[in-house]
Each structure stands twice: as structure tokens, then as C-alpha cells.
Length: 249
Image (cartoon, rainbow, N blue to C red; front, side, top):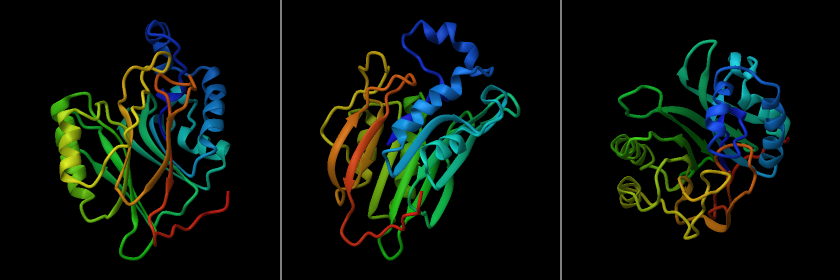
């Protein structure tokens, strides 16, 4: 699953971007209640990529939201990546939740004019063809996204089995996505999965891309209005010979 959780803010219409804007800066009691609902959604999955989480600051009551969701949803492994560190005010982050033990986790610093766009690369399995999982939240600028996806395509070139998930801020037919598809073996299932905005989804900007060795059994955007994005969930059959070590929850 890939889910942009908007720092635990539930948004039901465009007007709430204005009247709830203070929640991006200050704590509020509904945040953890909303995240408890998010945890119930995440709990059915084995691997989750999170965007727009906080690693512990004033607005999150100094709680690492990735760790909080991992504990609530029963994930034995979690990892957070701080993208923009504003000290006590905000810790903008990406996150990984996993029921499998990664053999390697690495922060990828993405090219951008304004620092703070990164990706998580986690590797699963041993042998010649492990699984590379990339979690990312790309820039709003098409030019920046082109550079970022070009960099990612280089970093994953040595892996046969790849999953790339996240808020890519662009559609499958954009120039930057077409470039990624041309340079890698990644593709997106044919279903058009609309995820944004959550109250009336008309844009497919959240994606789970896979290499052809995976058997895609199901893809869906879940109708849960706990953010301004809907979560996108994919059920996969693993490639033959790929073995991943599951941790007990």
C-alpha cells in the first residue's frame, strides 16, 4: 500500500485546506484518533509506503507518526526518513512499514532546487535477484520530477525485481513517467486508480509501479477519507525464486 496521510489530517472538502491549515503547525486531539483509523486500513498489508508523516515535533505532540502507526497496526519493522527538518516545528518525513525483514535500507537524496525530496530504498531477500522497494514523494515541478525519476531509474538499474510506490504528483502519461517506463522495466497496471482529492478523486497521482515478474492480482484505491489522498493498495504474487524473511507481528 502507498498512502499520503497528510500528517494525520482528515480533509473532506477544499474549504478545509483553509480552515484546518493550522493543524499543519499545531497539535490537535483528533490527529491521533484519525491515525488510529489509518492504522486499521494499513493493518491488512505486508508492505506500506507512507508520505507526509512527521517524525516527532510540536504539531504531532512529539510523537513519531511512523512508529505510532507501526505499533498500532502491528508492523514489526518500521523506518522513517526526514526530508525537511524544521526542528521542533515540523519533521517532514517519508515512512516504511514492513512485515518482512529488509536486508538493506538506504536514503536516496533526490535532485531538486529546494532541498528536501528524498526516497527510501529497501532491499528484501538474498541471492542474485532480491526485491528493491522504493518509496518516494516527488516534487510539484515537472522539470524536477524528470530529474528525480531519471536518478531513480539509474539507482534501480541493477535490480530485476522492483516496486516503486508513492505520491508521484503526475499521471502515467506524463513525460516524466514515460521516460521512467522507457528507461526501466517498471510499468503500471492498466486500471486507472484515482486517488486525489479523497472526497472527489479525479487524479491518479499516487502509484504503485512494478516490474513484469510480479503477478498483479488486484489494484484498488480504498474509499477512506482520513487524508486528502486515498490509499492505493495492490495485491501481488512474488516472482519465482524470490524469498523474503517474514517477521512475527
